Image: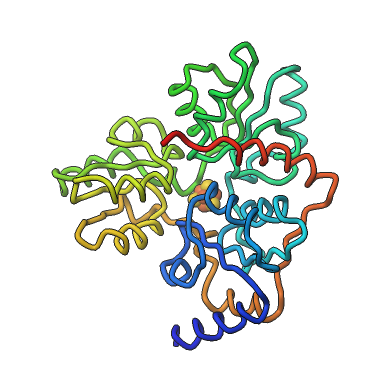
Length: 305
Ligand code: SF4
């Protein structure tokens, strides 16, 4: 069944000159049919440089919006129009304008997990892979507002030594990972290294060995001598970790770390998306141009090697 679907998707993709981008948290079978898989930064760069006419974004709305902002001449499709991100929805452009009003002159850094409108109100965008470098590139005497993820914000503040005004947003999926989960997983696999995403809460990060973005986790797992890993992020990444490192073992810190929005994308929906050219994601020019400025600055700052 999956083979037939995959075949149909491949044919349609060719006909429509489409490219399929999939986030590391997507279901395994979606990652397998994608032309590119990666974290938000890698996918943003790919979206900006692809020659395809159509981008099928297997992820959530803010990612498809990011592709539409960077490539306005392309058709950007999100296979499920309800695939949103609760964290991105935790701040509106109006709330950000009010916060800016209280801190005139502050530079605004927004995590890519935010709406196009919030990006348009921001000076810089960042991902978890380059947030430290983005903040380090800012003048040392400027006040910094960081939205919407308080946990990534605290991590960046610690790494850079910069005090930042943090918005109290958080990822509902990473919030499901607890200290207790890490302790139990360590007991079950004492030889393992724990890799945690910066979106995890502070006690979880304090119990982990490495704090890495998903792209950095994939790289570290490949290069490390370590054979067993506990993964404290959305469990979708374990598919690629296992595929790329068949001789190593990967265990989720908890099976509860599952993003229901990411899992809305299925092979059927990818096929329908290409058949019916939906759901088109567009960003009005007055927002797009301002949001692109923040994104261009982000794409220019790559994470340290
Ligand atoms: S994993 Fe968290 S941040 Fe990512 S899309 Fe899901 S809710 Fe949003």
